[in-house]
Length: 283
Figure 1 (cartoon, one colour):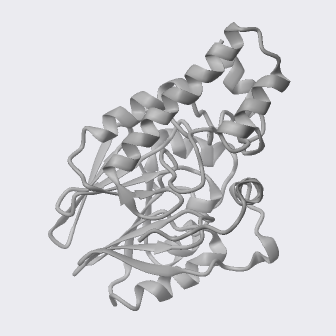
Figure 2 (spheres, one colour; figure 1 turned 45 degrees about the vertical axis):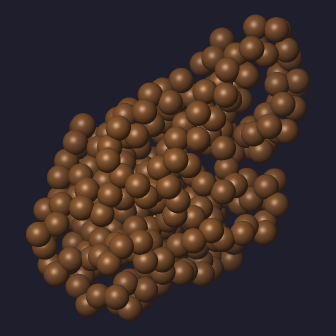
């Protein structure tokens, strides 16, 4: 399953910044691949950006987790047609960022209901973002479709304040959104303007890791294992411990930035205000 990523880390981070904020280079759709995870579960995958789309296929319709950008929606639907003639009934947004929710308008136009956490919904509303979810939940929700069950969980802040985990119990698969990215990113992907938190991230992952799964669909990157997600969780502690130690040593912002660049792939480039938010939170 592992695909080598040829884009350099610095360029990749710049691409992620642009995509998260809705800028698409030439408005070109991503090249999509279909990855079969289980007989009824697929990942519509691309080269890291935009985010992964997970599809549960049932005899009564499809449940999608995230739907990339609006420009990608037709290709998502065309890709689904290669494995099912059933319509998309539900779209679950793991969070509000446009590279995971940009296809909402088109999916709603095709008859799908969009679901998100109540915290993520508030970000949609505040930003006047199109394709706003019509169903929200606070802690937990269930989808029953075609004799299959999908469990939705909100465990707290991490990448944003509204991150959702989507659990497919019969397949032992978890779609983690951007609480976990695999292959070319680190736990420095904190959107403080979107309510993210370095401190809470670890506890949020701890709650997710209590679920009984083997396979993880990360927000970005290749389908991987629970063991890799646990390594990522440990890295959240390493990162914030390092920053806290440097703050206690009275290191300058420039010195801290240099360490973040070398050890955590240029974190300050990802979201506006990330470095300021991180230093304030870890004082």
